Image (cartoon, rainbow over all chains, first blue to last red; front, side, top):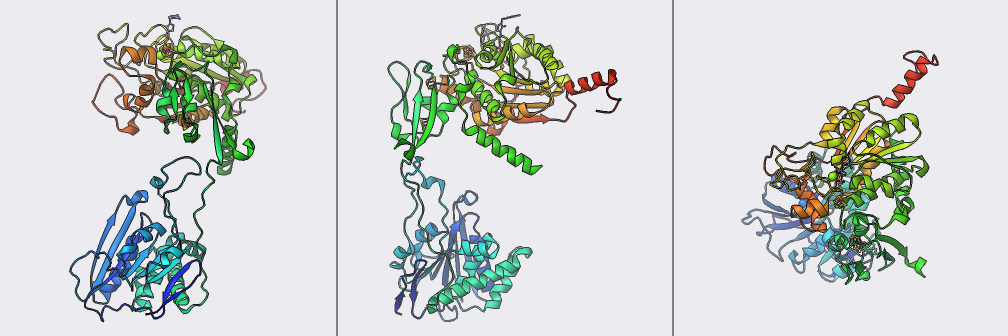
Length: 316
Length: 294
Ligand SMILES: Cc1ncc(C[n+]2csc(CCOP(=O)(O)OP(=O)(O)O)c2C)c(N)n1
Ligand code: SF4
Ligand code: SF4
Ligand code: SF4
Ligand SMILES: [Mg+2]
């Protein structure tokens, strides 16, 4: 299988003759790994797939983990199907398709793909978790993966990065992004389209059936078109925007004559950048750490602290 | 209506941006008299911020305060201030508001001032529902006079008048004001400064008697006598020692203290405001309007 590389920003690497995964053709089960974060509909995707497999008479096993799902934590679901499935979990390096509803989650699970044939399909939607922002300084580095589709291309056999969330939003329902990815997934398998649509119509809320079926088609066309090298409508991958480091400088004025050394500001400052000096007066010891959160100003019972955020332009 | 509310919130947020506390202070009196870490200072910031948020003109503002550290707080505000007698700020404020309904009358009082010597004034002010905002700074002690027991001192606390620990049951001031008929009642901790500001702001906006209980720290007297820790420890400890119900502090069942205290707005009623009813009656008696007509 020759690997065709496109330099398009949102697509990816395409295989010249992509495999159609057919459970009838193999003895081993087919493995689909679906990942994302809480609330995106990972479980819905895996349930639809599992139900179709069941309807078509295959043995199917599904297992899932929700890590703090309600708070936007990791959620993943393994779906394995075929004539015989023993273990419900996919071993590393054995996933045939990886469907990621969130960009960094896709990158995180990439090593589960089968080397040489694994297909990577990811929404470029990025949900930056709070713990990726360790430093609260405006403009500080975000601990979120900086990898772009270009970086992924080198690592997997076939890769698609599409802004499913944006496409679903344009179609009328942001929450249908997972169905759009189901459409993309359907192109890798041999199941008939009607079967997919029947199950999707059963699973989604009745009012949203139309939009879900429409985005399913969109997902299918997007992958098929990309494989044929046709221009497909999607949204380009936009790198994370980060405000310039220290674009805001905070000036903390401490009126020494008013400070009574109560220590409240020192102990309450989340960045620990204040100290009491030898005269028991508060002092900003590490100005570069101050995020301008106002806590010291607000809780000083003596009004001794005032914080004035000044933008860099104003300073210059 | 919703649009109006949204617009108002927007204006308030806009107002908030340029809040400069020194515009509202009598700077020549600073530094203020309060002990290091005293929660009354934080409460004062919340009040001034709320006043700013409501866009109240300083000339239209009348601060009436009683006696105590809480009462002294009022004297630092650069507006019309009236430092009255112990327990009686509500009585003075009632007279003032009746004579000058155009003023925003705010009472600053303490737990001793408002609930002990002034308890009677509180229940009647609440009953009448005259348009006054009453800020009770509850530090659970008589701070100014060196730490005597007050009607809100928790069980077992040491004070100069309870050397073996307090054995008296307490008042839940907010519930008291509610039972007496106050049109607006709420309670908040000083550590929740933005929430406290919003609560006061809402109280200021309310037409009628608004009673706001501010849970404050007396670091010097209450804190030291009872080993409640340093100033930062006391502020941080509010969420534990003052047992706000939202922190699930319903520890031991204690008949002597509201076992777990809720925070936020408890009452927001549309009872008639006393001043307006009064002026309507005067108009009627003077033959200006008919009964039942405004
Ligand atoms: C008629 C009268 N009785 C007693 C006093 C003494 N006195 C002054 S302040 C105070 C108690 C104040 O306590 P509180 O209202 O809780 O205010 P805090 O100082 O705690 O803020 C007392 C009893 C007084 N000034 N006048
Ligand atoms: S504003 Fe104050 S509390 Fe916040 S980080 Fe700066 S010094 Fe610390
Ligand atoms: S909180 Fe205010 S009074 Fe207390 S130490 Fe800090 S600056 Fe000084
Ligand atoms: S005695 Fe207590 S209430 Fe009074 S100023 Fe000192 S700490 Fe504050
Ligand atoms: Mg008191």
